[in-house]
Image 1 (cartoon, one colour):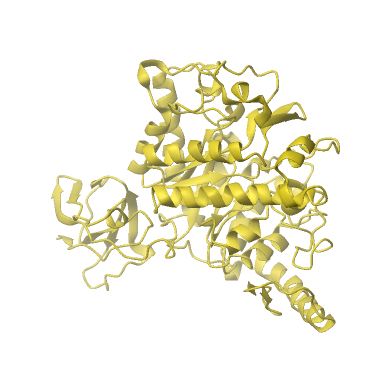
Image 2 (tube, rainbow, N blue to C red):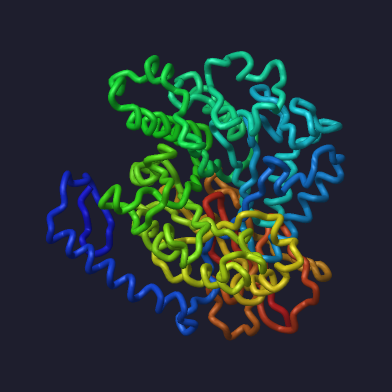
Length: 527
């Protein structure tokens, strides 16, 4: 890669060395940032308006019943009720994407011929919900009604959260115990086994082919986080599958293994449905500057590249992923990993792909040992900051359950009235598709409900996915697709007013699968 001395960006091939002059220039550039960043972070005069295009996501964890379902053994109606409660809450907060964990531990919250039903639904692995209920299908339908994308979140390697968790007899790990190993009281698939690559690819493409998901999502779990400095039990796999990496390049082999599954899945997803996105939410530090000249000014004890063997930057640069959302779950006074430093660092590694930031509202706690987390104010400032950083297109919250907490009422109100006042559109991805769909037609008003019809589309890319409703308070306003005039987004062919406006104009646009927006529809004029 060619190294830009002023903005940290790389193009082409990475040089083998950097001169002292280049290091000096980079140091000067970094010192400028040290001076500028605090001013940006704490300056209220620079706060941006709620942007029209912004990824606003929330994670919904199923493992250990963190978010949904709240406990095992719920009836279908209770499961549905909890889904609707989560989606309705997030809709009021301006969220436009749900990241739903569909495969927490080599199991499924949907009917699968490859893996058993998840224990986190019924309490027993392999036990299906009553009456052929499909939770994933319900999540997708309800999310799309609310103009929310549904990103199906998979954990690629984890088999058992605890080795005492019983596996059903036909589980793939029971059939092929040599495909994985136990580490730190959990079991994992061996990332270097080609049979594992093939199996994971089948699991993911099965969902892509059968469900109308908007994206496939992986989080930070690749090779396990190290436990008590124990080595991974992969020496036999290295000898068997290491090829030219064996016996001297164990760490490079491990990175190659993770690179391979990412590349395989990238191709498999796009071959099945070219419009389905592939996103990764990695640990927040790629490498420290002490380990690599291109690393961040951090001193993290764990890094993606060296500990988890996830070379995120390579995947982004090679176009294997459509978005990256590093988990920046730290504060600005963290001694090893400064939030602002990392936010700017990641913004320099987009390589023309989407970059979002994972945020940690779960850390807000008035009893926290760290002053910054005791009130929502600091979390709000994090959102305000990232909106000022070029290259950062949105954020995700971990996780959904916290927005129901009593002490989150103030934060929720701030999101509704200040930070996310108008609905935002998930930023388009022009490298996949950049053609706008046709606007909706046949707008009619029946009572307080506005109806319309989707225009016909010649292909899947141009099909209308969601709709944006604009209200212009006077006929004299130049009617452009300005976010100030957005009043609602929906996946349905209707919108119901609480009260009909007095005067003004209503117009609607279509969004396709990649969120390209159509021209405005013909108007409905209110007298």
